[in-house]
Length: 73
View 1 (cartoon, rainbow, N blue to C red):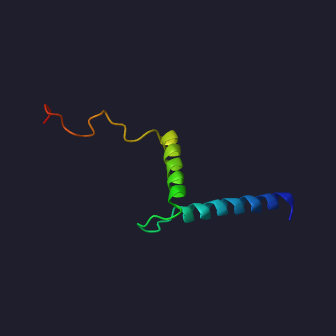
View 2: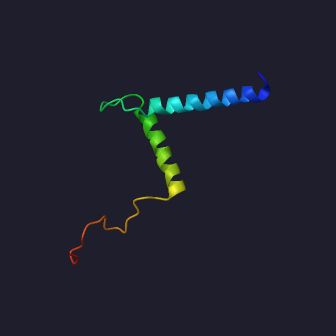
View 3: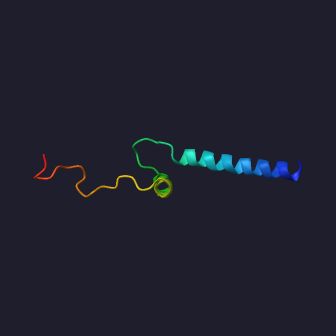
């Protein structure tokens, strides 16, 4: 193989490996806790952080959490 093809194959393999690992680690294994839960939580935390950076923080509230005050109705 020439150098460009070899580089493309290596990168494609790396992306496929990372994608497969991601799906395996974040798969739903049912309600029972398992050994992969800390890893899954770390991945989800990273996802939330990156989404916050890109799209801004969601769920910003004005402090009343949607509840009506005593003088509101």
